[in-house]
Image (spheres, rainbow, N blue to C red):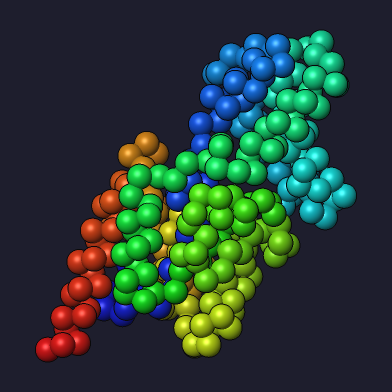
Length: 257
């Protein structure tokens, strides 16, 4: 965390940081709609395995392999439901996939974490440029609009649109360029902070770009304090907002002395 320099740019990861989803609940509900039963624990493990495998075979949601983001997610849905419903028809899988892809394009399947709005309002009050850096497909912009939080951000940068994904340093360099271009300012990496929930993609991705970085655990995820400075870990967004208020007010008071 910066010791005495006021941050001029703060960017956020989205999934697991600002937004959450009840994946098992939505998949089970849609599956049931089309006559498919699915066991939650198996679903969660199957989703994780398929996501990891497809991310290796078709990185950045299939942007460069010809698959494309929509078929990338269609493949995930097919495989997850086939794991528990061996004889399910392609016609049924199409209906399930179409419904889930549409649901995950809106606020129906996404929820803002408690404290997110208050944190964004707090930071905007201090005239800090806010942005998004997310390994996400091209649905992110409409999702943020639907959730009514898009106006907080100067820019929304996704891996699918940019063509590189976190932790690649180039996506952080691009974020800095977008901030400076939009605001007509000259922010340097040491004046930027990235906030996310993953050690490699968010924390060290930003650090490697010479940024400051913070991690949010939402009281659910254990973060290895041998790898990350304890002062850079926050249990929820309310705690992070209080920290920023104290930190920014301290800087403000020093300047007024």
